[in-house]
Image (cartoon, rainbow, N blue to C red; front, side):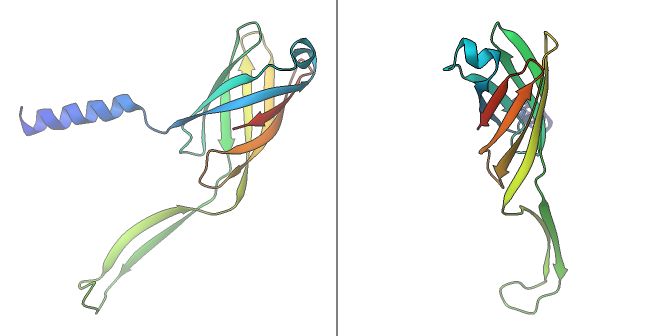
Length: 150
């Protein structure tokens, strides 16, 4: 196998991975028709691209109603560039580079999804910087109120 073939196989393998990470979210019905029918129900949602600041969100409401939408978080980042000449023995020739870091703190975010039956789910959450952990609240157009944890 030649060098080009090896590089192509490596790129195809990386593309298949998709990247970005995923995490599960739980929606706990607190009020409304779903909570009245089954107060112990937990709705599992899947958030993709959790290493970024937004991505797709999918879940199913009772009755196998599929919902698709987006989650988004306002996560500030700092970018610093270095360039210069150094006269030390450790870094002869100078430094050149760039670094991106997440700003520490608590950030806000939103979810919005539209379900196959026309139901719309909308909510807000807070999330720790650099983590995929948070909590919030959501409501839907059928009068349900949810606690959101992930």
